[in-house]
Amino acid sequence: MKTRNDCREWRELLGAYALGHLQGDERAGLEAHLDGCARCREELAALQPVALLLPHADPARFGPAPQPPPELGQRVAATIAAERERGEKRRRRRLFGGFAVGGATAAAVAAVLLLFVFGGGDGRGGPEQRVRFAGLPEGITIDATLEPHSYGTEIHMYVHGVPSGTLCRVWLRGADGDSYPAGTFRYRWGDDSDAVLSSALDLSRTRAVVVDTGKRTFVAPVDSPVADLNIPNEEEPT
Amino acid sequence: MIQLGNSTRGALSRERDVREAYAAHSGELYGFAVRSLGDAGLAEEAVQETFVRAWRAGDRFDPKIGSLRTWLFAILRNVVIDLGRARSVRPRVAEGGVEPSVEPLDEALTAWQVEEAMRRIGEDHRRVIVETYYRGRPYAEVAEELGVPEGTVKSRVYYGLRALRVVLEEMGYED
Image (cartoon, rainbow over all chains, first blue to last red; front, side):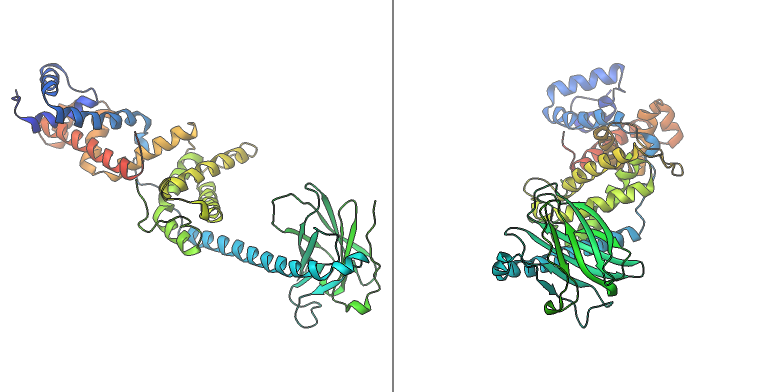
């Protein structure tokens, strides 16, 4: 039997006591010690929450924890880098758009849609082309980036300022005058992301991007000097 | 609580910070995701989504409110809920030997923390807690099997619980 002064030996029984494993004289002796030892009471109070947590664990799961595959970190980094790049592209396009709204006020009076092409070289069939719809009603911004693919053309469409929930239908108009559907999306307030659409029409044969917002149809000619435009301005109340 | 030494407000807004956070916490996040979802592929998806969401919201992270680890686990918890909803409408994919947790998510998180803490304490301490508590074996029998006095088994249980407490505190567990 331990003496009351043997504090360390009593303390080392606190684990078994906290788990409810002490019995008989040993339990009675420890409880008597606890009555007179604030330090051991404090220690017991620190162990009891741990003892209460043990039933939550499954001892079958105490083995080595599964580790993430090494390439997961690279995937995370690549995903974030891609998202950052998309955001930077969008900001650049919005910056261009911002300049154009002011410059196009006079054009808006005549409801003329002007074309701005930010692509390099002749642009047709080459790398992506950024086209922006200008002369739009005040507060509305629409712009698009067209990327050539073997299957046709990928369209990143940015719309801002139309009523939230507006259903937008998009077509590409070809050199032959036919329209090729590119899909639909809804504009939502607070969502600055691009809608990603695609059309079977080859970018090199694309002459215009057409966006129907339900109440109006907007057209931005693609890769043609403004003076060359023979595409009618379409702003059709429906 | 564990906090990255250089954590400041907005500490996850740069990609380099995300890489550091990933190096520090991805193992634990993945372990919990596997335990909750029972599927390694879904767990990878959950961890990836957690860091992407953390990066998007990086400016809002404030270490004065809580540790980066706690914040990441809070994001992962939401991701796991979202994935669980998505999985409920598609067939479950079995993963070799890993059973999905069927507990409520908060219970699963508590369980995972205790299991992780058990993994981190010394083998001697873990062994006596497993034998006496989880398997309910008499101390004398465990002592004989280990070739040590019964008093040593009791003291190992005590030091084992102390070690668990320290590890749980390091992991951010609060009473």
